[in-house]
Image (cartoon, rainbow, N blue to C red; front, side):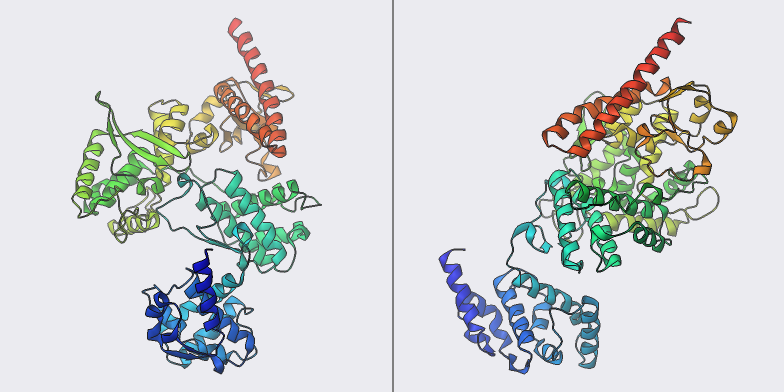
Length: 581
C-alpha cells in the first residue's frame, strides 16, 4: 500500500470514530461525492458495542474494499446497507457476526416484513455478514476463508467461461479445524492437478455437505459407520451421485493420509459403492428419437439449432460448444471441413471433422455475429453480456423445453429427456459399431479424451459379447476357461481391456477403476492393443510422478506396469503359439 492510499485509509477510519456519521463530511472527495447522498447516520442507537463496531466495519468494507458493495455500485443493495442501523439495534445482545447464517436470514426476513421494507432487501444480510468477516480477516492468499478470483489463479483452459466463476467460501464449514483440512485439499487440487475449476468446485461442494453432516466431529475422527450413515442419508439421490460422493470423500481421505493428517485407516471404503442397475443400454440416443428432433429442429431459434447440430455431429461437450470462437472454421481444400474449439478437458485446441452442410450453417452464424454493432468474440454470445459465451445451462434448459413442446418420445413411448452428453455416447458408438473407426481415432479426434479407457466406456457394445465368448482368457495365475454360468453373467461386465469375472453373488464392484490388480480381471489377445496403450501411458507418467515425489502415484504406477507387462508377455506368447499351430 503506497503512502497516499495508507493516509486516506487512516483519515476514513478516523471519520468512523464518531457515532454520528455525516457523509457530507467524508475526508476523501472521491468517496464523499458517492456517499453524501445518504446524509447522516446515527449509530448511537446500536447499544451493543460489538454490533455497532460490526456495522461500522461493514461501511468501512464498502469504502475501502471492492466487496461486496462498493460505493460505485449502481444496485439498490448499497442504499439498503445504509438502512440497517435499526436492525443492528434490534439485535441487542445477539452478536451479528456470530449468528448462524440461516438464523440471521430468518430474523432479517421477519424484520423486513414487520417494517414494510422491500423484499429484495432481504437478500443482502448474509453478504453483509460476510463483508464484515472478510474485512476483519488479516490473512492473505490461501490462508483466508474466502477464495475469489484474486486468489484462485488457474490457466484459462481450466475455466469454463460459459458458467459463472464461483468463489469458495470455507466459512460455510463451521468446524474451524475441518475448514483448514479442506483448504489444504482444495489448494492441492488447484495447484497440483489439471482439473477444470468447475470440477474442483464440485469436489468442494460435496466435501462441504459432508462436513456439515459430521458437524463438530473432526474429519480424522470420523468413523466408517458415520460415512455409511451419510451415504444412506443420500438414498433418494441417484446411484451415480452417491458413488461420486464415495469416490470424492475417499480421495480426500487418501490425501489426508499422504499428508500424515490421518493416523487410522480410511473411513471411506470400497464396499460403500453402489452397483448401478442397468436394465437396458440408455446412454445413447435412439435413431427413432433423433429423427423426431430433426422433424422439428427448424422451429428452434437459429443459434439453438446450430448448437444442437454441432453437439449431434461432433459429440462435442456442450460447454465447449458454448465457448466456440467465431474464427472456428477450417477448410483443408481437399473436401475436409473442420470446426476448431478449445477442449477444456484436454486443455488444448482440437479440430473436429464436420459435414459441409454444417460448415455452411456455421458460416451463416459467423455472418450474423460479424453484423453486430460491436466486435464479438464468440460464435454463440451471451444475450446479456458482450464477449461472453452463451450459458451452458441456459442452452440445456431451452432445448429441453423445446423437446417437451415438440412432444419428442423414446421408442417405448415415454417422454424424451434431452441430455447433451448422451450425444457423445451416440457418436462414439455409431463410429465404432457401424463405421469401424479405430477406437484411438474416436478417442483423440472425436471425443478428446486423455485416457483410452474413458473413450471405451462411451462405446456401447451390445454385440461385443458374442465375440468375447470365442476368446481364450488368462488371469494373473494363468489360462482360464469360462463356464457357461459365467458366460451367462458377462453381459454388462465388458471392460475396456478385458472382462470382469466377479460373481454376481459378491455384489457391486467396489473398485471399478482398479481392475488390473483385481483377482477377477480377465483379458484376451483381442485387447492387446489397448493393454499396450495403457502401458505406454503409465510409463510416460512415471517420471513425472517421481520428479514430484508423488509416492502413492509412483507405487500404483509401478504395480500397474508390472501387471500389464505380465499380461502382454503371456498374451504375445499365446499369439505366437496359436499362429504356429
